[in-house]
Image (tube, rainbow, N blue to C red; front, side):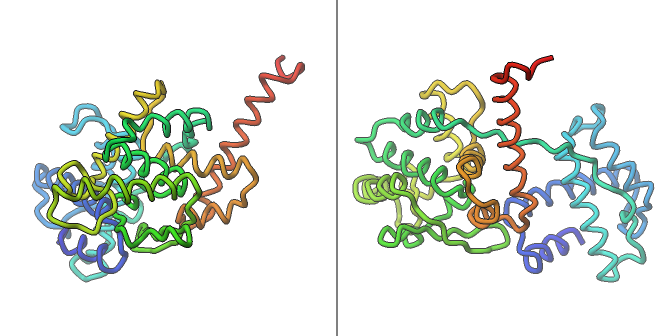
Length: 301
């Protein structure tokens, strides 16, 4: 029944493979929890069972340890979706999860790098005379220059980039395509990589249309892209934790700070709702408060 639900979210809802993999892990955890309590069928689950499972996610004594509020909320969302599906398809008579709410998550402001740190990061891509160095600079310039998700970036094919019109077409969540503008820095870095870097990397591979390749000529993975950014941050001497999402957050924050309309940023980021994008306006407000507190002579009591 779980596999049937996962097929449903792939086909009907178009969830990404990463989200589906997370749901699969979450529901296996739920199935194991039910099995230990001798709950053999989905139809035997009660509302109290679902509530107890939800509470267990935050307990340190459980085998998985205490999950963060956001991770626990994702697990509960997966369980609620599963039971809703089972009831809708007639596998169970009722949905026992209807009244069980995910843990509340405090609204966390995304952490963006300041522009000087971004410049240092982009300048620390390693040896630009090597194919890997050219690739790394192209990847980082693309991530910061377009705000693309790391999965969107490593999934790019060469034909997805149009250096004539200075655009790149990415496929986001739910298989939604969006066409993003390429700035001068990103387009030049990609052009140099395609001319001098990618052919060298491709020699070792079996032939692939993917844009970014590893040293074996195979498509660069998400994990390897994370490693590229982490290594560049270490070389740049950036003390804070830097991830691919740091560049995405920085892209959005810097646009908002310089007067970009929030709905334009929404389109560029591929957010389904402008509410998700509006969190970046809160980031700039927090920055204004910090500057005010540090600078105004009567800011401190």
